[in-house]
Image 1: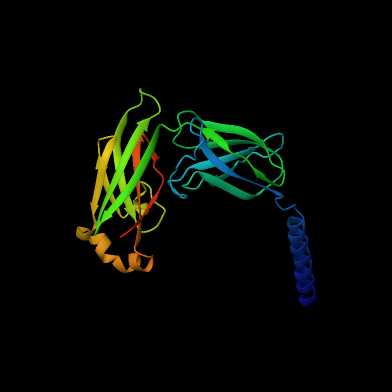
Image 2: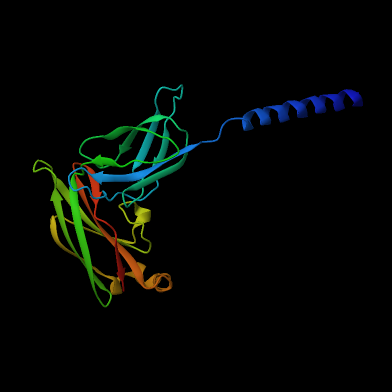
Length: 230
C-alpha cells in the first residue's frame, strides 16, 4: 500500500511539473505601444479622466490571429497611454472616451511602438487659478466644438492629489454652475475637508490641484489639471 501511494505521488508530481513547464514555454509579450490622444483640430492632448473605474478605456483587438479577447487598459488623465506588455502583431485600437465620434485606428506593433491617435472632444476647456490666502479662484472658459451641442452643467473640483475628475474618490470639493465661462471660487478656509487634512497638504508643499469639467451630451470633458500653492 505504501509503495503504491509513493508511486502515485511521484506520477502526480511529474505531471504537475510537466504542465508547469509547458505553460512556461509560452512566448512572453515582445511588444508595446504608447502615444497621446490628440485633438484632431488643435493637435493638443485631450485631457481625460483619471485611470480607474471612471477612466477612459483603450481596447486592442488582434487582427489576423485566433485571439478572441481584447487587451484593455486605461489612458492617463493627461491624454497619454501606454502598455508595454503586448505581442507584436496588427491591432485595431479603439478608445472609448468623451469624443464626438469613435476614436479608432489600426496599428502594427513591432517592439515598443509610438502611435498617436486623433479625436474630437465635445468641448475644449481652459482653466487658470489664482490664490488669495485660502481662497482659490478658477477662471475658466468652455467652448463647444459644435453649436448643436448642449452643455448642461459645468463643474469645478479641487483635490489633494493630481488625480482629479468627477469620480467621488477623485475630488475633495466640487462646485456646480451653469455658465460656460466665468469664475468658480473655493473658500478653503471655511472648508472642513481642507482644514481636517491640512497636515497632508503641508507635507505636499502646500499644493492642491484644481480642474474644470463640462457635461455635454451626457459625457464630461475636462480642462488640464492646475497645480495651486496655498
